[in-house]
Amino acid sequence: MKRPFKVFVKKFLSLVLIIFSTQTYGNIEASFEGKSAKLFLRVANTNESRSKGLMFQESLQKNHGMVFIWPSSKKQCMWMKNTSIPLSVAYLGADGRILEIYDMVPFSEESVCSLQKARMAVEVNQGWFSRNSIAKGDKINL
Picture 1: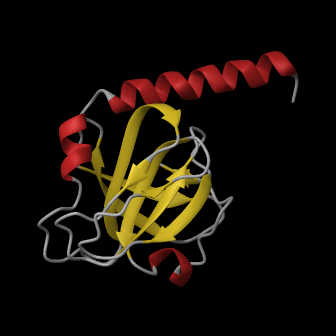
Picture 2 (picture 1 turned 30 degrees about the vertical axis):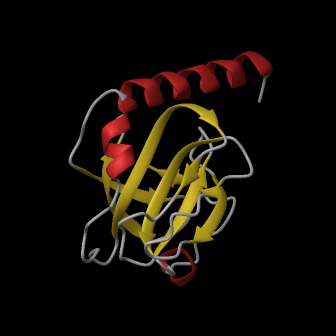
């Protein structure tokens, strides 16, 4: 790919993420490139919705989760305060590629931080990523 086109694609994707992150949606359907797995994700794209996350929920339906979208890419941290559901979190780059996946401990107030700069994170029932053969490097389509 030629450099001007790559720059255009990066700027276009950033613009789409900025527009997407300023609007509130209910659930969105997400798929993964080259995989049959689908997720229905609630969007957390404001400080308030990201802070609350999945707190105080008693359960999470199969193939459901939450996508957290931040205004910029940086090292992000998640915790499980007031969250009883065992979850897995995947940190994503601005391009939607999975950078890292971690299992979280219910009610833990210890932060689980990304090692790389992440723009988004997806939380699902613990083990969902491995059960669906989703791994580091896979790309989510929102």
